[in-house]
Length: 288
Image (cartoon, rainbow, N blue to C red):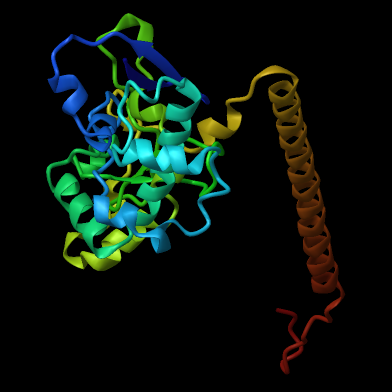
């Protein structure tokens, strides 16, 4: 028997299936088999020497049950026929993910992920403006079971869900990389990767690169988004806006009326002053 691993939205599901009687299936190393599964394209193969070094596994013993048996399964110390327990295989997959998160931030691990990044095995940014910029896997949490893996674009600096990968088997749902636990990559990897290989850091998107919505060639004004309301909130907003407009119109009328009254008062004052001024009499006694 060999165990086929696929991911649902939140759980790791283990299913056993009968392989061909050929010996080649049994000779395949566990790590190579795990990384070759559908949806596991983001994983790299952790070096055996790294896993055998107990210092690199410090603190992981309490993270999975049957730690020693899981380690023996990963290192092919026990064969697939001896590991007929699906729970053991699931724990081994969890343990490998935790080891993988540590390995990919080492020098050898970064080099292994560099080759995958260069060949765009992690995928490309779905944003049109990024023009096929290669992305990097990232976990939003470092704890297993908290969240699934995401992809980080170094050009637009945004995080996206990875596209689903459809499996050949209809029983395996097609969650693909979208169901891989994010803790297998961790929160540090993509940023340390770009700090290490600074020549791979792309130029940021220009400020005028954002998409501009247009209707018949004319740009859609931002005020249309403010007016676009649904339900009672939209009605209340429209009613409030209409009330403010009426109030503004009334104020303008009052100001206009006060302004006209002021002009009349000034004119009456000027006429009165003009009438009260004495008439100058010329020296010859004739009135002008």
